[in-house]
Length: 448
Image (tube, rainbow, N blue to C red; front, side, top):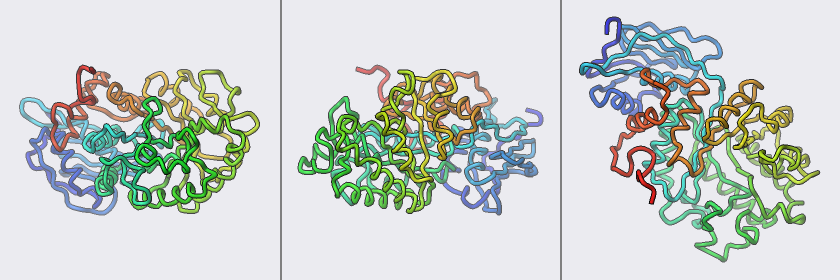
């Protein structure tokens, strides 16, 4: 351990004021296997320092710079998020041997291939708050920059109680989650689907959060219940109320995700579909006027028949361009493509010159997210959004795998086994303790 920084039982240091919080202290204590405590005094700038190690130089374009020597560790961040991502890298370097905690000398700067690294998570009725907290903490450890949170009937709204199942999160519970996101340096992004997926439930199970509780609200939806009826004057008004509540809950943030995918009823109804361009124009311009960048899935705006069958493109011929032209200039396009394993994505190449920011969205399979990462990096696109949907109980380790492929740092002992490393990360963020069901990423080892 010659030349290493030996971590004492009580570590004292300085950091920017925002970093002097309970979450930072809990992370340090957990990565020190509960043997070490961290006490921080607030200082100026996006810095963190323990011991007498000098602050490293931060080069242009880098999110953080880190220096570790035998005298301590020092971090400089481009902003608070960059500082915290450097802190995550520092935590990964803590080792334990012969009952001693230590960090080997290191000098590094961030090396992410993509600047905007988002992850989209769904809060299902089967998820408890502890699971979602651990998921957010895992995303922060994996150095994503944003987490898009979609409540599938799991947030209690004031404007319409039927938007939530009875056991949904309260505003206070959800606020504790968004507050912790900010402490972790990962920006929370609100999402509410304002076109398809109106049941807030997976279609294969037939549940509907609103209509199963109150059938008298059918006028808000298409006859099948799966999509919102945008010709109903109550729907835009409800959406406006929903947005205001989510803005209050999420606080100052850059984006608002409107979903807008898989509105199947509209695909077969010319009369309803004729209203979509004007509705989409009003919706995206309203959100932009409210100070947010509207984000949306692009499958309804990509013309079917223009791409090979493995691509998701549901727009009707001759109408897709009209929808594209209706978007507010601030709109961020999110091209979700889950079957493509070779870059570049043809849909992304088509969309990249349309005058909007473009995010590419894979699912959890390595060949797919690798192809999307390469498409973004090679074509200077705006960013990546990893989607997770309902498959985390089998594939949570892909959150780490995707992050590593982009350039996130992981444990110094890593042998490129994402399953074991993800399990270790989850143990490190289990601040509240673990029951059997809460350990790992599945409540059961054997799915009955």
